[in-house]
Image (cartoon, rainbow, N blue to C red; front, side, top):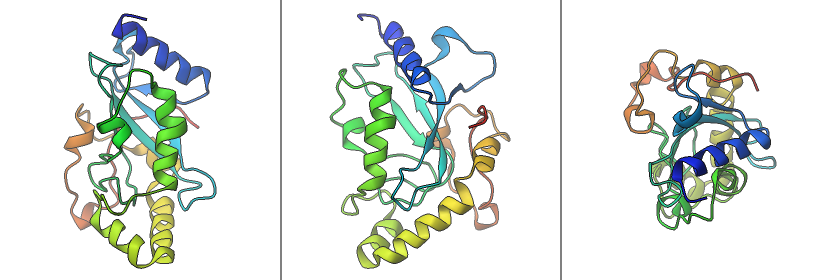
Length: 192
């Protein structure tokens, strides 16, 4: 597979074959438009994230798979290594040690589930989550479950981003005022 465009198509097709719900940023996009899309991601069982559903924004660079994808959580999540407002993810395998041997299936079936199972509070993007986890594990688990119930529902994923067509979701979410806590960011996807 020498062509990055061909590799993108292959990786997205693998996602479909494995029954992942994948949707483009804009309605009607097909074929080579799959460089920017959303994937619905369920929290791993036997973690405080179980039962949660997140919309993950994926952007594949022209040099993919030689350059890593950009990924970010669209609806809110409480985790030491995920920025609560922008959804940016601190994950070495994506940010620093990416290899063309990895594909999108690895991200959604291995890397993200492992990140949620084994947070690293010593290298946080969310200082509040990291501090709470180190100080009070039960309190951290309760806060994660509170966020799951409030922000990681099918309804939140369905409604996420319907108010904006901004294509730079991972960095444009910005900070929300406390009055805006119930508003979410992102686009629409098919039912789970």
